[in-house]
Length: 132
Image (cartoon, rainbow, N blue to C red; front, side):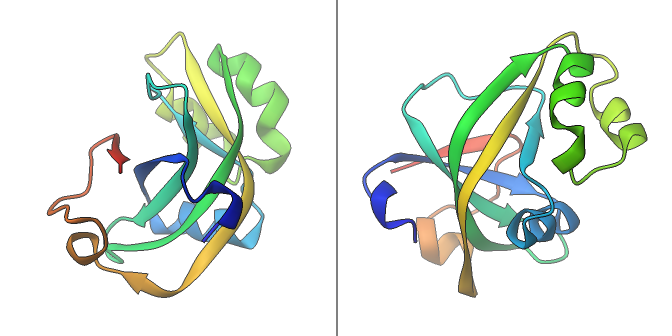
């Protein structure tokens, strides 16, 4: 785990396995979101790789959260987006505002974890869940 962030507020994000893998390979340095957490003390994202993996596979430190129009965010993050422009535009198609979570130090767990066993959560969140 990220040793300096042990006591930081964490959120659990459901991320499609193809994008989660790109985060941990370093290819994807931004995680895009249509909505963002209200709490400002969130420093770490715990990654739940959605179906067919269905496991918590790692975590990353939040360096910065960019906010803006989808076009402006794309202009500033496209080189390390880990996603095609068409897929990005489709994701933000009905939004005037979007967010890009800038990914800092990341740790891929040596063994994927079951959501229930690791955090006592029975279902992955639709958007995100705060972890204690």
